[in-house]
Length: 105
Image 1 (cartoon, rainbow, N blue to C red):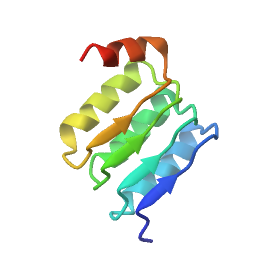
Image 2: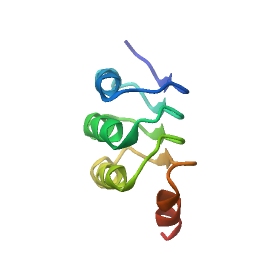
Image 3: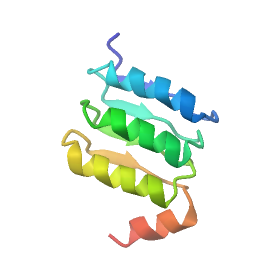
Image 4: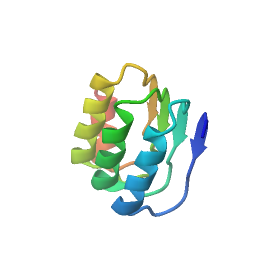
C-alpha cells in the first residue's frame, strides 16, 4: 500500500487499536502525513505510535485533542530527537499542563 496521507479522527482508540495504527504507519514508507486528532490516545497510545514512527519517513503528525499528559510528552520529545524526517507535530487542545509546557519553548 502506498498511502501518502492518513486521517483517522474522532474515534476513541484503545491501546490495542493504536498497535494496529502503528503497524499501518510503519508498513507505509510513502506516508508523509498522519492525522490522529480527537482520538483520546492518551500516554499508552502515544507511546505505541511514537515507537513505530521513529523509523519511518513521516513529515507531519497531528495529535490534537488526544489527552496527552506528561508521560506522552516525554515520548514525543524522544521522537522529535530521533526522527529527522518529522518537520511538524500539531498538539492543540491537549491537557492544560501540556499547553503551558509547550508554550515555554
